[in-house]
Length: 258
Image 1 (cartoon, rainbow, N blue to C red):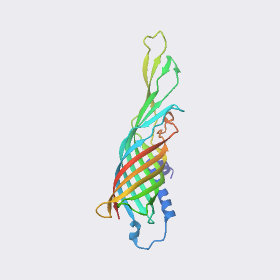
Image 2: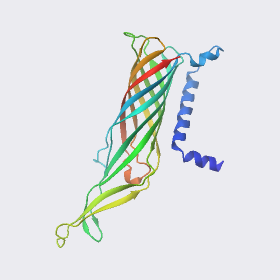
Image 3: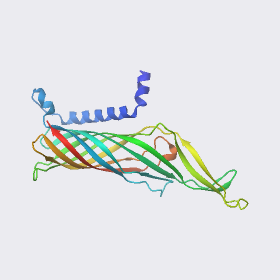
Image 4: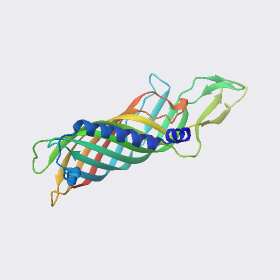
């Protein structure tokens, strides 16, 4: 049992999947209502979708703290399952995946060792994969306009940030201010970082429209999603800004309705 628990704690993706599965199961229990005994009712008013999205994340400015953090834009894939228990209310489960790099700029003060002088801000780049496990309430419009049916979502989930196995380091440059060393002595120093995968709790909101194509079973889904969460630090105190960021994701998907 101890070995099993250790294995569970060391697998952040598994933790995220279990947490969101329990969350969606809880929502399903709250939304449960009387159904007939027909087994096919389990997928009535349900659909699956596969889409691509752009990922745009806000930055953390080094104003009240010494760490500035930014994320490069990226593209990813989103897999969703929608299930409506009522004509206007349902549940949504999502898995998303993307890859990007986190950039950090850490400002140190002056240092004095063998060489007294100033230290330029340290820089680090952490390439990472992000796995999204989210569940949400789904609210649909009671009417459609030109066959377009809008909807909205609000929910919670877990984001898992997985860095590479290769070592990451903070790099910074020192410059001597001693007049006896013209020109100033400069040296590049690298500080290895002990980083690891990290789970981040996230809030989810989304609005979108469904547009059926040739039949009611197949259609296009256009969606705007937002994810709010703490900026990842990959378990390193050097990279911990303790600030929240917002990731915006425009999504285009194809859905199949059962």
